[in-house]
Amino acid sequence: MNNSDIAEKLAASTGVTKADAKKAVDAVFSLIGEAAAAGEEVSLAGFGKFKIKASAAREGRNPSTGATIQIAASKKLTFAPAKAMKDKLNG
Image (cartoon, rainbow, N blue to C red; front, top):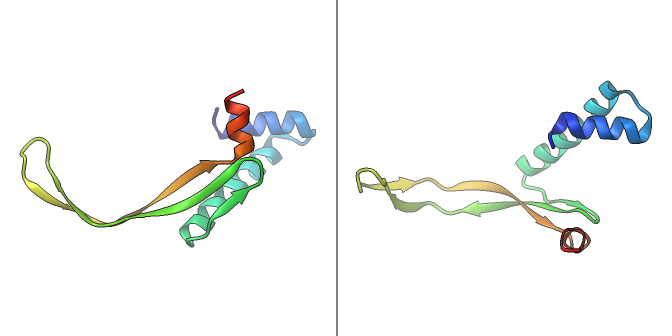
């Protein structure tokens, strides 16, 4: 399922146009992205939490040459499902 599919289902269930539903879906994901970029946690009741996880700089190896390389510190967006979502997935 992608953004367009979500927008179509939203339009069908709410009676709004597909264009308006697409704008709403895009706005929601944009807001989640903006909050994540600002370091905020996004919690959606009954669905889950989007959190930022920091990964420290570390040393790694190039698999083709075996040379040691430095891997820069980075941030990742992670998702942890809520208990209600876990229960729904696992019956």
